[in-house]
Image (cartoon, rainbow, N blue to C red):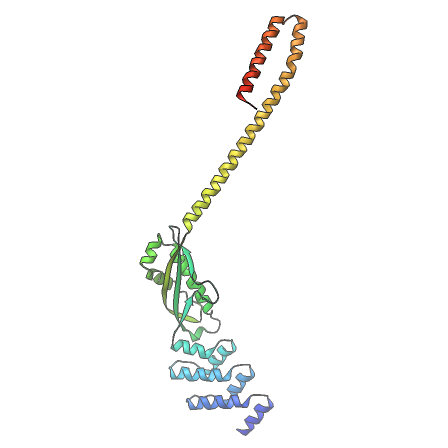
Amino acid sequence: KFSELIGMWLRKVDTRTIVLSKITAIQAGLTVTTRDLESHYLAGGRVPNVVRALVAANRANIDLSLKIATAIDLAGRDILDAVQTSVNPKVIDCPDPEKSRGTIDAVAQDGIQLKAKARVTVRANIERLIGGATQETIIARVGEGIVTTIGSAITYKSVLENPDSISKAVLSKGLDAGTAFEILSIDIADVDVGENVGAQLQAAQAEADMRRAKAEAEKRRAMAVAREQEMRALVVENESKVPLAMAEAFKKGNLGVMDYYRMKNIMADTEMRDSIANPK
């Protein structure tokens, strides 16, 4: 009506958008009022997108009301893309090559690293679009499931021989719970052998043990050197007391001249042996 157009103009509503959207809905056989479209426009919604989504859902025989469609649109989700994904499932690369490294890396129990790529086929669940997790959550959960499955494998060879075991194990975990998608299939696109992480860890542990042993040996050597110096100090201290003791023995008559020279010969013989044993 002309009065409705005047009212929309006064409320600063884009009349062209509302009129074209209403024409599209009527031609598709949908019952949509101008007031509903205008209300959604004033709420900040994308009216053409919602109408196209309703048309696509109607043709695909998907139960989607205007109330649900506008609520999903106001929640910031692309309702048209959701309907199209519900009709034609899409494939998600895991991991996302644009946001992370190109493979999911995990280590089997025998220490061999495997690098995997997966392709997840999902279908939008319109009922869970509001409040449901996005495809980033799907990617994260699938990646976690692949890492867990590879990590529980006894040997990397069993994974290479039967990569479908990863798909079946991950798919059975119900990873789409609480998300806006329904996982239809998980396919392992590629599995490559990486590094021998177990051997690297063992080598690092051996290196650490060797350094610890060297430190202990150096500690014992330092203690032995300190003990040797302590004993040498005691010897020097006691040697300094010998002349005093000899003088006292001469004074008391306990040491004769022949005894003195015999002792000097012994001392000279000891010094000669020391010089031979420890040449400078």
